[in-house]
Length: 113
Length: 115
Image (spheres, rainbow over the protein chains, first blue to last red):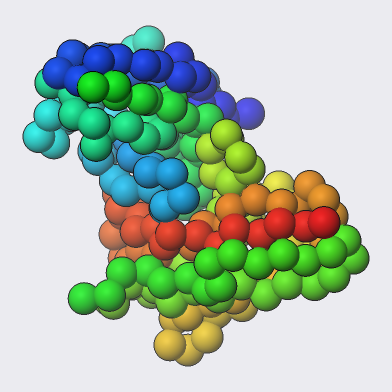
């Protein structure tokens, strides 16, 4: 069974600090790995998407890394802002699952002033 | 350029009732996927529609059904509602032609509460 696990479940940091969120997935091969940001009560918004051949992708203050050997990805947020408070969801598209995406449970980030 | 729009935004039903949720995809998109997101959980894939046919289905019972119209809009129907169906229902659209690397655009969701 394809699974995506994220850690930590929740995280509190002070404004201006950096943080790193983790994502582990089981089963392969996979097609691509995505990170989404979801504000409370809103739909997820895409931050990055990486194929198996890419090991890093940046989007402003967000940098995602991928290690296909260990089946791990991380999302690094630099110089956090209050608006970064949201859930961050790791999503994997497995090639043996057609067009289905498997979502992790998300990490709830709270940035405090 | 309108994004994905969903209606209604909130609704309350009682056990045993039926509900219909609606979704209009982003302009230029032809594929619609539906997800169920329980509080504090990640979205779970329900099914995907392209060319008015269900193309993929997740692990959901037959009480969950859908439809796609010629203008690419879609409906999600849930019959015989259970308390456990209370969740945020997300619609996501994409362009079928980009296959595996397609970026989904999500709507804001419909919050269903079953009493």
